Picture 1 (cartoon, rainbow, N blue to C red):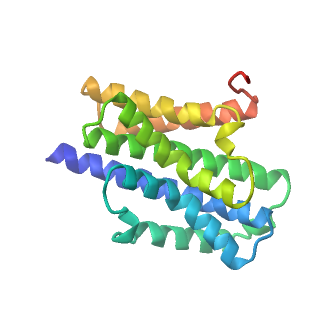
Picture 2 (tube, one colour):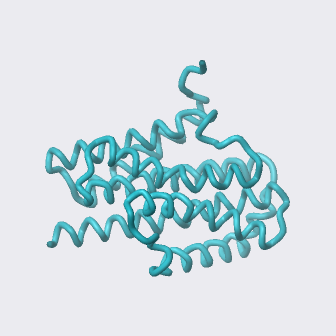
Length: 208
């Protein structure tokens, strides 16, 4: 029971961190596309919760966002903080770097949180990796399609690969009965480092 409580605690923090990070990345995309206030809000919200809704549908449960408003409060607080910090005025390379960092944080956080949920449901390796992957990239795909961009995952560095890697490592650790907050946040730090280094060095999978 104590282990389950710790698992849910880690998941909550990862979801909240990922939600805040994806809210900022969606906000920046909306600003870059010069959307109005409602447009920016829609892009930010869908980026932050899109993957979670798809994940919950796959797990045959009512999306958590419909009865737990904590994610919505995080989105609202993050958008207000972004506006107060004048992030909409950070044009050029500065905006892109901030977008990459926030998008990477959201990617890894949701990959691990989704993988933890898959492990909690007793899924196999494919199921855990797939649920982590969908949780992480679902919102970004919805965002990119809405703003008429090719989804980031299809052509940028090792975006999806890192998501599957950290989800797979978390599954492997659970099979070896290695768990706990330290492990989760070590995987988070490792995944984020890999993603940022890959982007900085323009590392990517071979093209067909």
